[in-house]
Each structure stands twice: as structure tokens, then as C-alpha cells.
Length: 254
Image 1 (cartoon, rainbow, N blue to C red):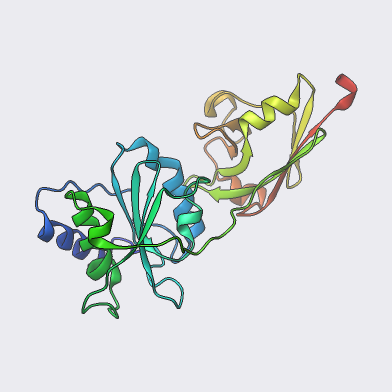
Image 2: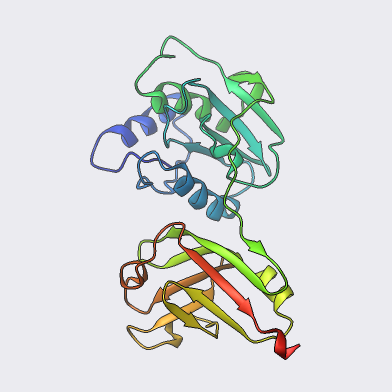
């Protein structure tokens, strides 16, 4: 996964480096269209999909690869998956659990390279995928940059969340979790507020509304999603990343 796009040589060069270490490795592209340097976007995509891969998969994260000024590169084991990337905070955003182990990758003559995805990360990822241990590619450490992901706030009367991703269709994915909504609702009526809109129902599928109408549902990630059927909700509703979304419960029904 990278923020390199597909119009240059970067992605192919990284793959070539991996295959030069072990031609038998299988390489699967998650996406190379992460917004440049946007680790929040990268973390959301990776968090949404990594558990769909077999345990033991090695994930090479080539996003904001020059990282912070410390210029460290890490391998991390999280839930029996391996992640390699710059120490730029992304390891703390992939999963709420602490990594089982972390190693700072060994550096070579290319340690000051302008292309660390190829010269540092690709070789280490290929070695790890070929059966090498974490101690073969780096030195164990407990230090890594931690960043705090935006969380929803919940009381008995209200859930306050935010848009955490505007997807390719313009749908607005929020950080409001279905499980929390079900627990707090307790058969009460509710109103969902976003921008100037208010709705009081949740759909089961995208096509329950007519073309051009707004839908609200819990997606396959268990997150509240807002969209316009065959339209771009972000543009039409004037909402974007970090826009507030609130669910207010009616206590008179209790």
C-alpha cells in the first residue's frame, strides 16, 4: 500500500526489489492511491482490510515513507500480521491493541536514500515473508511514535462522532459504531444530525432509497455511513473529513 500513485516507476521498483530477494513471493496491491502523506487515510484503509488477509501476511506500508525527522523504519507484529513502514505514527492507528513485538529495521548503505520504500522496506518485507525472523531484519524495541485516533463520545442521550473517511463514491463514513448505537438506543426513537440534515431511520442497504435521496446505514465495518443514492454526499451535503455527526435519543420513549 502506498501514496505513490500509478503514473511513475515507484510501485514497480518496490515490487522488483521484493522479487529480487525471492521471486516466489506473491504480491497483492491494496491501493496506491492513498492521499499523499495522509497516514489517517492509510490507517483507515489498512485497518478495514488487513484481517481479511491470512494470518502471517506481511504488509508493506509505503505512505509518508520519509516519516518524522528521526527517520526510523519499523517492523511490527499485530494480531499475527506483520507491518513494515516509517515510524510516522501509523502503527498506533492500525489497531487499538499494542503490537506484540516491534523491531527497528537495520540500515545499510542506502540508509539516507531518497527511496526508502525500495532500499529499506522492500528488502526487509521480502525477508520476513520468506521466513526470516524479526530479529533478522531489525533490533527489538518498545519505542514507536504514538498518535491518538479520533474517537466518538457517547452519553445516555447522545452519540457525537465525526466523518473519518470520504470514500470514492463521496459516501461519508463515520466513527460511530453500530454496537454502541444498539446498546444505547434501547428501543428509543432517535434523530441523526449531519450538516443541515436530520433523519430518524437507518437503512439496511444502499438501494432502499430512490436515486438522489439520502441514505444512512451501518456498513460492513460496523460504522455509520451516510450517502446519496447514485450521488456524491460529500459535495451535495457540504460535509467532509472531520465533519460532526450526532445521534440524539428521545428519552420520552423510555
